[in-house]
Image (spheres, rainbow, N blue to C red):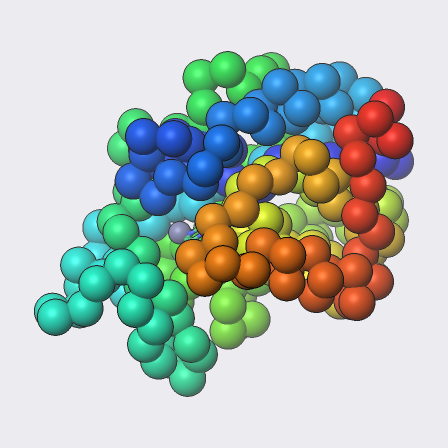
Length: 204
Ligand code: VGL
Ligand code: ZN
């Protein structure tokens, strides 16, 4: 069975959103077109409580972009984003929800961030996605979405680490590039870990 994972195609990651990924809206068309070609489509949804510790607003004197230690892990501080139930946490209106078979929420634990759609950053808890894919016999996973250098990268690295043949659709992703070069390094890191980088045209 072929499975496509759509990573965090939510309003807050779109231009004008709270944690805007430049040109993030451009991948919605790719997502809709590819979803039609796959047997099974899942989506991740960043879903934070308002007191999430990844928010700079929870750390007096800190600003978005600062890096702190959170539960022993380096944590970039972000603007408040993807608050549970808010407009910003909703999927982009143009995303064809009818093609999405299941949604996995992440970042719900206020103490821990979860870039990956599989596990939180401390790998303490599974979102249920891995078990869900295993039940359905998924061995190959294609991914696209936002952001290349955070949630796409960590999801792809986790997918490889649990033995899935992992393919990331490069032109279906956009990155943040908080430090210039982050996006390029993310692609290198994924490739080095055994992720196959593909294009929409090569998949369809
Ligand atoms: C993301 C930063 C914080 C992402 C989510 O979807 O890449 N990045 N939360
Ligand atoms: Zn987040």
